[in-house]
Image 1: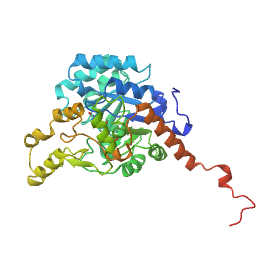
Image 2 (image 1 turned 45 degrees about the horizontal axis):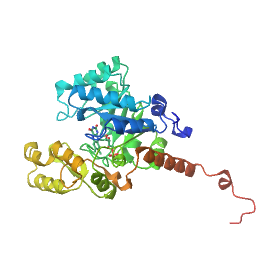
Image 3 (image 1 turned 60 degrees about the horizontal axis):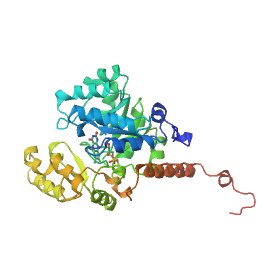
Image 4 (image 1 turned 180 degrees about the vertical axis):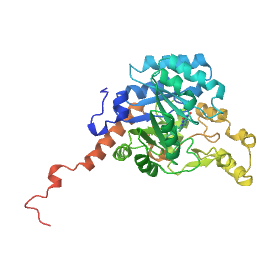
Length: 344
Ligand SMILES: Cc1cc2nc3c(=O)[nH]c(=O)nc-3n(C[C@H](O)[C@H](O)[C@H](O)COP(=O)(O)O)c2cc1C
């Protein structure tokens, strides 16, 4: 696997920093992005992230990082630290970053809260920090506190799109105008043509979650993956805006109930919703394949997810689609110049 893009047009600050074949990040996936998945991405030439919150026991996280290193064939990978309070309690967050630094990880993807208090731990260890935010205004803040790169996820994304719900195309153009540090775009990215579009607008790459959910290396029940393949771009729902914690998930019985509860009482609290939205219910769906219940993060690029296959095959498809998009932008010389004998 060449550690460079096949086409120099796909080389960016991201591919150069990490020696990637494609300017693509596989973002952290709660309960799903384990060593097998992350190492598969690393071997295929993208940068993938283990999710620290999926391994609450420090020994388990240490072991999973070591397992990932063994399987990644020397290729770089990172760890995602979501700092939403419900995932990593505040007092534990610094310990998680210290563990990651001690384990020799080169790059972290932070999300959910301002990472500023933890930057000294990461900088001292020479770790690249890519902070993920749901909008350009948060990206500006992240830039001001000294992160190395930002990824901006738009309204289309699986998981948490924030409260403003600005789409990825608008984020892309705004980021190019306003940011000085390298930025990545996410939310609805699932085709190579979109990678080229992002790069053309100044992005250093894209972040993908949903498009990879049916990868063979994702440790979920086959029925879950079949449901992801069968779902379309119209099969997601936004919930929990009443808690200012909007989440985009697969539309199912749970999202219907939560929608009714939120509509009935705009001040409904997390306690009343917990019996439906608790993470353990979603985790069970990954294990049993019954996707009718639980908050199963998924974005609008479900419409672009058309088969379960090895992650490397999806990455090869993205690469071929990016090459085709670049070819469309570079018409063959003969097509550019009309032939002299051609009549209008
Ligand atoms: C099932 C699932 C779980 C996710 N879990 C996390 C997480 O634990 N931490 C995080 O920062 N982002 C998480 N995300 C967001 C992704 O890392 C990524 O930013 C997002 O999926 C990109 O948008 P897309 O879904 O449109 O590709 C999750 C997304 C999905 C689909």
